[in-house]
Image (cartoon, rainbow, N blue to C red; front, side, top):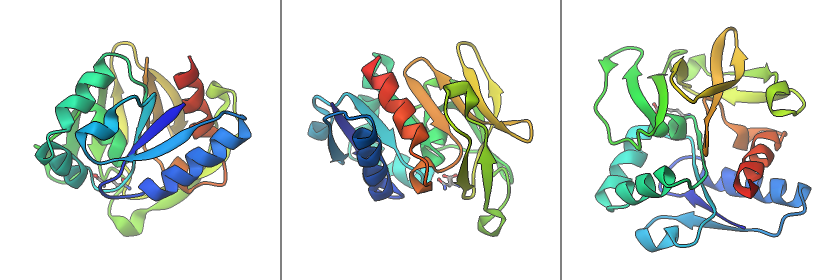
Length: 200
Ligand SMILES: NC(=O)CC[C@H](N)C(=O)O
């Protein structure tokens, strides 16, 4: 199994480590590669879009001409995990809690509405215990760093976890989005669940 991690900016190294731990836990033979340019996308079985700054990740991917490729591969079924900024990249509808409508390059394939910086600024970042029973995993602690919120679930989207009534994890077929950072947790549950999606 070959997993590619979009590696321009943000927590991609942490995702690489966490994916490695999850592969080990599940006894899956896997290779993890950073994705920067078009050819890196060849033969990957799944991709991860890390947390960071969605505007930066989107702009670089667009400038390097890889954004449309990623979009095409995901729409033809390539499994993707988008965390925090990555969840924003996946969303069809994005706005900012303060400034309202934003215009930024997106993948825009998932039927969710996402509000950026929903919980406030950097200093309003926090940690919370999340119930993962809907994916058959133990509850775990996760960090939310200038996190977005998934405020609307459209057709074919399942809400998989909530915090105070707000969706923090959702899935639409091959696309999995979390508003928190599973790569910065002691728990490998989300990565293991994602590897399960890849295995099918
Ligand atoms: N930790 C994160 O990924 C933060 C996301 C960031 N606030 C954005 O809008 O892109």
